[in-house]
Image (cartoon, helix red, strand yellow):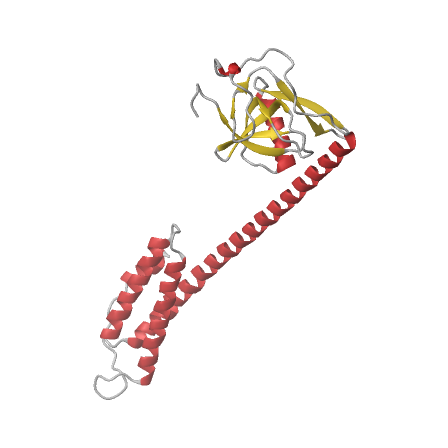
Length: 275
């Protein structure tokens, strides 16, 4: 491209060619050269627009402007044959080359996007299949109530909050329990369910494993595990047990997770009497 730009500046006037026809009027051939030159200028302008936002954008704009200046100069000098020769030697090749380059890149981007969308569809299908298989195993296993009642003395994350009455779900205020762990079940290597525990003091690997389980089960992405809390939480069978359940942070809000039916209920942290 730089050779092309240099060719624009390297042109020298070699003398005035006599235009066929009477006086200074242009003939049909000369008018045709001018129309073809205008067409190429339009193509260069379109090409410059297509390259907008790329590292080559400024160079494309410079090529268009310099070519337009040459067009203006040669038409003013009535050197339309030289203008046609210039376009044949430079502009046509430039337009064809850089249009082809852009087309290849755009085709690659389209294929990449299609591949990404296809991959996302396959991932969603696999995730749905895993979730459905896990649901079947849970139903067949007839799991016990997973809303765990308190079994020992309670320690809370915020001092003085143990005296707060257990809230019911009207966007209740909750306190993170730093001792109690809850049990959840994941699929093992075969068709068996494997019990696992998660709590405030669990390791990072254990928390990551729990979040991976939640992603497979609910499809939640970018969720984080906060801890466990004592909540009165509805079951889908009409019973409303009170017990320890996991608390998740997802998209800016806190949710209590009922491990019996994997439903989420919004909650908020109780902070020293404030909401």
